[in-house]
Image 1 (cartoon, rainbow over the protein chains, first blue to last red):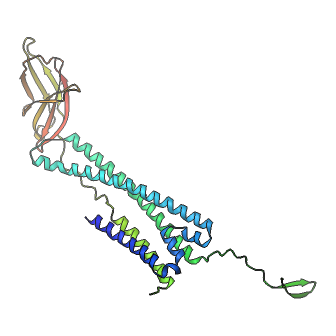
Image 2 (image 1 turned 45 degrees about the vertical axis):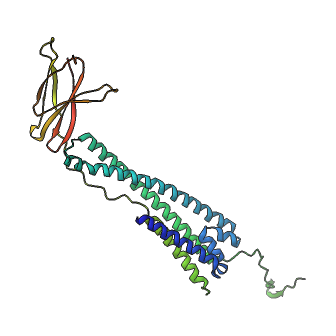
Length: 178
Length: 131
């Protein structure tokens, strides 16, 4: 129940963010940032920084794929653990109902539950690692897009005024191109 | 209403973090590992032997020893199946011996005996072949 509510809130927030960013004047003002929030590297590509765009996009894709895979694996491990735990904790109730319980079944269930718990803990570590990777990728990406200037493709003109040394004299030269 | 670029960028960053936190916190987690149940297994019967007093009758005597009789409530004797047929509970008894008369010869059949504790936990089996 709580998970469904959280998912709905998350979806609503994501939709609100997307709609607000696409329909307000802010979109035009911060288009590179919006693109980078949607997918790291997109804003950099929009600004003409293709190397950084490739690096951020690759990092984001790897992080999201890893997060998805580790989350699926983790959820399965948690489900297995919960099933084994439910079976294990049901033994006293079986005995209370007058049934005889095999000691080997209790031991096997405990081992299976322990193994599933260890696997779930490992799965959680990997899931958290990829969460960290996603967060770091997004944070660095957004900081980068905020600090960087768009690449307009213009070549910086040489300064029109320069200094030249001739022996022990200094000459100020002003260049005029036609 | 126009929002300044800096405010928008901050809001976008916060929204991204919030979405990630909400999405992750909505996933199931493994709860605390439960403490082990206090259901000790009873001792395994030892010296389990099956004898046939008279070769002309289908009478068999089952006998075994137990190291801690106080923890045992009763014993179970099984006729073990051979893969296709499962194990069959022959009898439950509170003694460490049992006499049975079968309507047919069980010579060569495999039997097992196990102890059931006072907490209704059945322990490991001891196995013997009928003569």
